[in-house]
Length: 306
Image 1 (cartoon, rainbow, N blue to C red):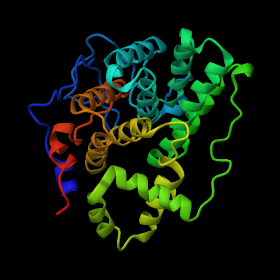
Image 2: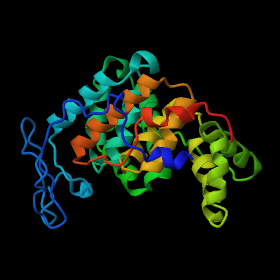
Image 3: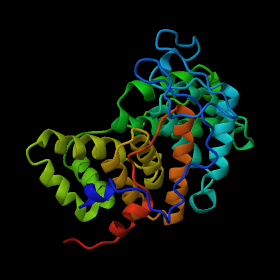
């Protein structure tokens, strides 16, 4: 089944390791250093005690690290360089990044990401910056379906602190949204694109939990993920896949590695996307120990229904 293959171990043929990992100490539940983690060798990510969060990032208590703005900028550049832009396009890397950063406990670094982006020549005018903000905001709206409201909301507030008045985008993407048959059908269509026949198994699992089936169709897919008016299907999976993977969820990560392949992203590109997410996880002090890789689910991508 899809769930069992999703929890399989990393394939040796995959480029599975976290490349260029900067090691740092992570605090355990009692504030003691994890003895299995090596001391920092290059970047010295500062660890907060639970009682003494930094003034600047008090909202990021869920993250184990306290990197500097300079370290964040290095992460942005590393992810942009590694991201498979030749295959997927130049305007997608930051969608993955804002999703992973926000999920990983550093939503306030959305401010630095936004400032980094608007320093580029392609965002030199207010209309260009408004279009950028629409994409960033929509990524965070979609991320709500995966991680809830507080982290994405903090990211939005953080960007708002540095947004110029002339760059504010006053559009409202779901102003005319309505529940009903059209929304339900759109949700079911996009769910079917990602899951195909594998959805039969999830339907069986939810037979005694119909609230969650309703949420999946009407809200997660109907309201959020099937709306491609701002972010297309690939962009949408670049929100969902990091949002799930950064939570170290094996089953659901497998589903969306498979779904990302099914919407046309190549095998090698999906592996590189995972390496990008791992860079963000490292930055956040998170260990993605349970998630599969694309090599583990590849046999499911085009399998026929049983």
